[in-house]
Figure 1 (cartoon, rainbow, N blue to C red):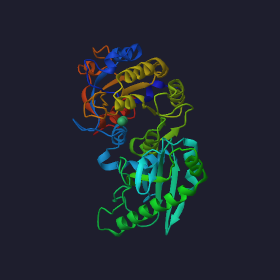
Figure 2: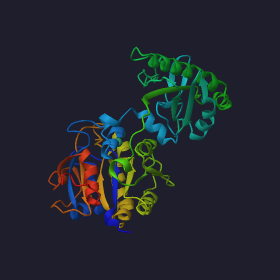
Figure 3: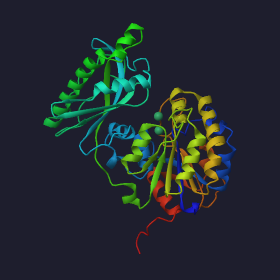
Length: 403
Ligand code: ZN
Ligand code: ZN
């Protein structure tokens, strides 16, 4: 295996932070990342553009060479692909939540963080037809799931039914005058009503009522998007690529752009994910692929929770358990985040993320991997759209521009 012609793109979700007075990256003990920084080249990156606050969906599309302004059609289709639904052109997909409703009011948006096993059993009563439209529902993790509407003449230009707080279930409304939007909003409202009827009588809910647990008796929908097939990463860049990730969104982004997706034991998409197994799977996948996209979620979740220590420990765990495995592979390594999730903001921000590249690259003077040190790195300040050309050049797959 000529590993120097291969690349691993490690995205540590929400990696960047703000100093209070240090950042988690500056605080964490991370000798392995620092060694790579010392032997490689570093810099800062604005994923989508300076000051623009990326979502994880748009951020990843951009880093993988798919300009979100052209290729992003809502989160729903990406989640549905990640949940394992084979989408067809024109399908309308939503993110869904099981919720607890009393009358028309939501009393728990997550139905008491419904157990995944029960959600799987409830799934069966949510697959039915409304006139000529097929409703395909799949539960994913805990109270979460996806809904796909398949039929002729549908539109994603409708409002969502999820109030995003404990309030009443919203009526979906068409957001333009087209008959497609009117039809789709009507189907969504009919689905919402039928779902409540079917869920109410489900034996699991009857049991939950008896034992005083919140019933999962409503489905809330958000993130509508129409699926549009796009050219694959092989068609666009002439490379083969695979994805190692736990979360449905990241698997979905990979499937959307024609990457294969590996299912790794213990890859949970949460902070307890099995980093060693993910590392081993990544290195094994280099055999049949030019590029492996490796995603680790935990840091973003700790950032959202404002948990500085959690984020710092997650970085230390990545450094100890994951970095040595991928560093030994000899492949080019591109290590960065999809955006900053500063603990003091408890959300995403438009601050640059540090990036390091190790492999067929020159080395700069930077010896540690963090937001401050990388300001002085040899890559300078790059954009997310630069990542794919940099990877192609590193692995010898870049085409000459001109003659
Ligand atoms: Zn993210
Ligand atoms: Zn996030």
